[in-house]
Length: 226
Picture 1 (cartoon, rainbow, N blue to C red):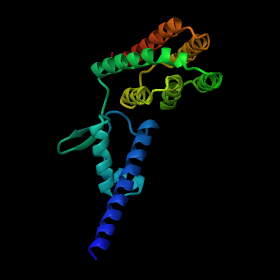
Picture 2: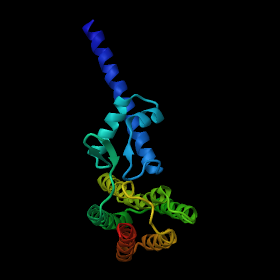
Picture 3: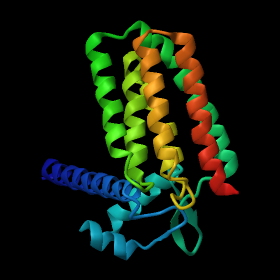
Picture 4: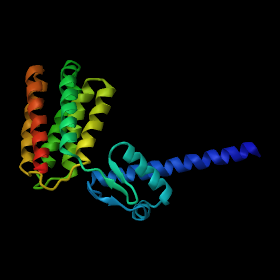
C-alpha cells in the first residue's frame, strides 16, 4: 500500500510540475506576443482562466518568472511584468556585445557552405518581414534568430544560451511604444552588411559592423527612456 501511495504521490507531483511548466510557457508566450506588457499587473484568476488551469500552477509559474527577473513581486498586490531600466539596458547590451564579438571569429572559422546558406535564409526572412510599417515583438524574434544562427556556428552551447538569455531580458522587458519604425529598415541594411563580411570571412570587418549594429540597437532602446 505504501508503495502504491508513493506512486500516486509521485504521479501527482509530476502532474503538478507539468501544469506549472505549461503555465510558464503560456505566460512567456503572452509576453512574446505583447498580450502582457512591461509594467502590467497580473491577476491570478484571469491568467488561470485564460490558460485553463488552477491558480496553483499559475502562482508557481509566476514565481519562477520572478526569480528569472521577468516579473516583480509587489507585497499585498501580486506580480507585475518587470520594466527594463536604463541601467539594466546598458549592462545587458554590454554583455551582448562581449558575447557576439567573442563568438564571431569562432563562427567564421567553423563556417560551412550549408551554415552560410542557413544564415542567408535568416537574413532574407528578416528583409521580408521587417518591411511592415510597425514595431512588433515579431521583429525582435526574427532579429534574435539571425544573430543566434551565426553564434550557433561557433559550436559553443554556452555562448548560444547566454546570448538567448541576455537578448530576452532586453526585449521582453521593454515597451514597444516610442520605438522608431525607421529602425526596421536600418536593421535590414545592417544585417546585409554583416552577412557580407561573414561570407567573405572578414573577421575584422564583421566585428566592426556588429559593434555598430549592437550600439545602434542600444541607442534605439535608450531613446524610449528619454
